[in-house]
Image (cartoon, rainbow, N blue to C red; front, side, top):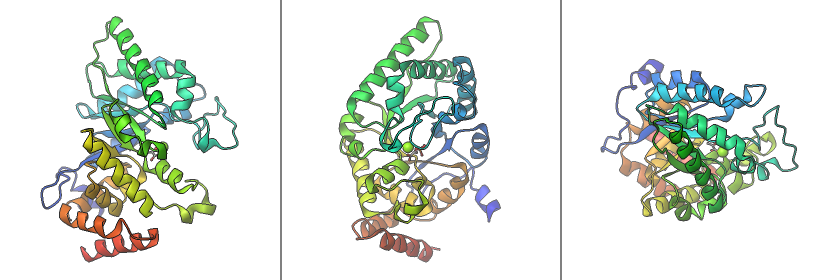
Length: 324
Ligand code: PEP
Ligand code: MG
């Protein structure tokens, strides 16, 4: 079976009725990159830059960061590489930058940390831009956005770095900038956010956690964590609709994209780029190549307004089984 899936590598990720989906990969280490190339990823939809920060004993210097970023950009050029700015806090901490809080998931996380410490953000963006010289396949993505002023502030810093780097004679182009939709407030501000950036990407892991008020890492409440919760499905649907209404591309980079049933529902909602762990690429491509878009749309219609996540899950599983 695995060999069969590997053979899919060079086949297009397209439904039998001709609907094309772009499959991207989530990376952190170089090993993810190598594996995803052999599994046919068409670019990086999420590079978690905190990973190289977590394996270091201090903040990596601009030079060190530049080397990490260059590796990722080179491996996928000319395809796009989406680099998320440092997303620490919550469940991800750096031993050399401790954050002690009572409610870490509602506290100092992601963009909140880096806007309070612009020196971290500026060095990181500078390293990304310099690393992209000659490749021009960099996209920058902002995590944990909960209002438009965070986007404006971050954009201001990115423009500043862009001009500085060009003045230092680096021949770079302005990267596309996007935001993650992973906080419930952002679901209701998709249009306002989209107006300010080039693309959106849904972080379904955090979005599910915040919509359901269920800690994504707490085993005690793990049975309440459901990507198939009708409330989650309706939020995801709304995001896709609103983004398309203002003409901005929207992708998804949470675990749900790597689940075959989840991927079909997302495709039916209008997401045309799915980013996932390297290991999930072949099985998602295989399922997309086997069911028509019209079939997936019918499935979404049947399940989106059901009462409970369990019923949604059973319906999706049954439908997949009946399709073979
Ligand atoms: C997410 O929240 O869905 C996401 C992709 O980011 P992370 O898992 O790194 O928080
Ligand atoms: Mg997240």
